[in-house]
Amino acid sequence: MSDANSAPAQHKPRPLIDLLVSIVIPSIILMKLSGEAQLGAANALILALALPVGWGVFELVQYRKFNFIAALGVVSVLLTGGIGLLQLDNKWLAIKEAAVPGVLGLAVLISTRTRYPLIRTMLYNEKVINVALVQERLQERGLVEIFNLRLLRATYFLAGTFFFSSAMNYILAKWIVTSPAGTEAFNEQLGQMTLVSYPMIAIPSMVMMMGILFYLWRTIHGLTGLAMEEIMAQQKG
Image (cartoon, rainbow, N blue to C red):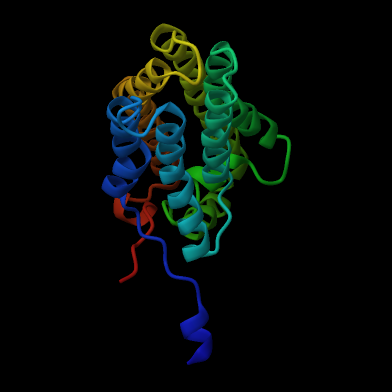
């Protein structure tokens, strides 16, 4: 009984809460509460950035599972806070915005030289694909090497989505955030950039991810003959 009670909770995606806590509410705080008559530029920035950081830490404690991408997101938020509170040149914001997805893209490429390619963590994993059945069928047909080559191609596509985000983040930051860091105008523009980045960057990146997942499914289906319901992981409960 005690072992069951102490087991970490199963993570359940909550995209609406993630969107509200990480993007919508912080953006509103930055745009509406940064004036001296409200919280002030520094306090509004601290409060806005505390929400996604707090949510990330809560999820880490709740599910007891380290997530490299989530951790990088928390570091990104802390760097944004440092740029604003230390009143650094806002060119560093553009560099930071480009660096985070750029690092992920490089990590994806570098991981192809290791035993643990990141595409297996992000897309080709037991939560998305019935990996055991797929590998069994590939081995039966002697097509493991061909599949690995196509998985490598999908890895390059995945890295490309991060490099796309990197370039778009830099352009968006340079275009929108033009006021000096530490000012009310800087906070307002930071909030605008956060809101605009979702439809302009996050959604296209999500569509590209779905395209890569479709490519994987089509590849697996073509090599193994498995149907969609056999390829996709079965959700328990």
